[in-house]
Image (cartoon, rainbow, N blue to C red):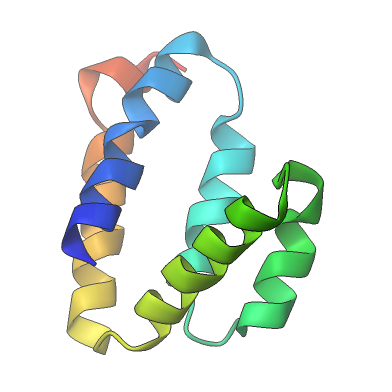
Length: 93
């Protein structure tokens, strides 16, 4: 789970550096972390960005992992996300 989180969040500076998709990516991460969003709603929100069934299964698994995390862990992920957005690479966009 932690590896998935790290891999997902390491891509943020690249997207922000390119200046594209930051809002979409931010919304996706927010809904991924949000414990009030269930798996069905999460997948429906991302349907346009999921190229196939395998990708949908991977995102379903990732969301289920986040749903099983403690509030403390989810808060730490949000802190990490904010630290990345405040970084040198994202600050310009």
